[in-house]
Amino acid sequence: MNTATILIVDDEQSQRSVLSGYLRKKKYLTFEASSADDAVNQIKKKSIDIVLTDLKMPGKSGYDLLKEINSFSPETTVVIMTAFGTIEDAVRAMRDGAYDYLTKPIDLEELDLLINRIVERHRLLSENRLLKEQLSERFSFSTIISQSPEMERVLNTTGRVANSKASILIRGESGTGKELIAKAIHYNSPRKEKPFIAVNCAALNENLFESELFGHEKGAFTGADKQRRGRFEMADGGTLFLDEIGDVPLSIQVKLLRVLQEQQFERVGGIETIQVDVRLLAATNKNLEQMIKDGTFREDLFYRLNVVTIDIPPLRERRTDIPILIEYNLKRFGENQNKKNLSFSKEAWDILVRYDFPGNIRELENIVQRAVILTRSDSITTNELPQVVKEFKHENEIKSSPASEFLPDLVEKLEKELIFESLRTSNGNQSKAADKLGISERNLRYRLKKWGVK
Image 1 (cartoon, helix red, strand yellow):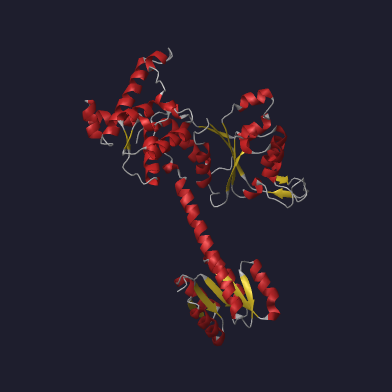
Image 2 (tube, rainbow, N blue to C red):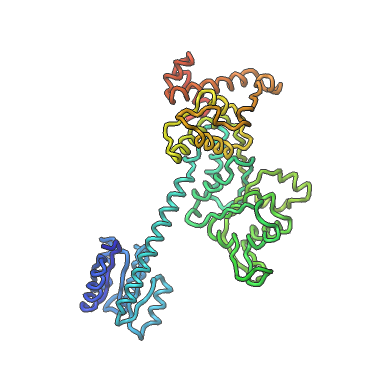
């Protein structure tokens, strides 16, 4: 049986019987109602996907029924059935939310095609809703892998600005997760049902930059054989994320500033002013203040973008995140490769947790994925690590520490390394880890709490 449930509303019994009988033969579940009030009662008690309603009925009309359904069950699709002489009323009903209309006498083949179209639309809407729910869950703050105080501060700020309309500048080295933070802001904001459009400004051809952002009209330039919407139009109602904002040409920066100020623009080669509602998030790994001094970035655009700044620290400055990121990606890539019982040897682990990861999280992911692919056993050794990682010399912290770094700070760093290593080899069992270290479990818990480790 088809999953769609259909309610036929008509004051004529014969009309209801014909349509209901035909749709039941098509394996749909059908119900009947003789009036608008009867239909409302049934919709409130049952799960009705589609309503086929006559327009002219004693008492409340099909148009009245449409307005009532829209008020309490907007997910129900309404189709108006009308005589030829009242098509204008049916068109008015479509403007107010009806999906389509059919003229009497009903052409059953036309009805079949229309129902199939509605069922397919419902399927796509359901899939789209599920996808958005999955995206919201995937990019919730709780799913961002971190336990360091540095990232806790970043996530705290991110959570507070998500519901605002302010432009946000996300700063950090390449590979630190700037786009992940941008998506977390979008999918935890009131705009989460609308598009998130990401643009890598560094990858755009300078000659076509304006067209990419603002679109173009047919014939605007050689090769423009049809009208095209730009990224701002695509993001209307949602969020536009401009990655590597420092690579935007000066000529485009002026137009970008106008869009941020007025929320309107014209397509390339066009004269029509297009109004949009877009929240802008921008990211960069460049020193924009220095670019302003050099004359390569507009100061007024910088302040327009920089309402709120989120600085993401590099991985080497939040080393407590390195072990959990390694473990998380080892499990993730292991499952992808159907290798579910993988672990790093002690030597390989020690090298990884001491490595500085200049490419940040992106480099860490690549290193772990490479190791998972290359290993022939459940234990990943140093043979599966890239040469650059194996050759990395972890400088003696005491020798390399500036004079301003006091002995207690150095001792705490060493304590962290020893405690995290003991927890790893104890599979997270704090009691066992404390025994190995020769300290009480209470002492261990105190240190973890002090460092903000959950």
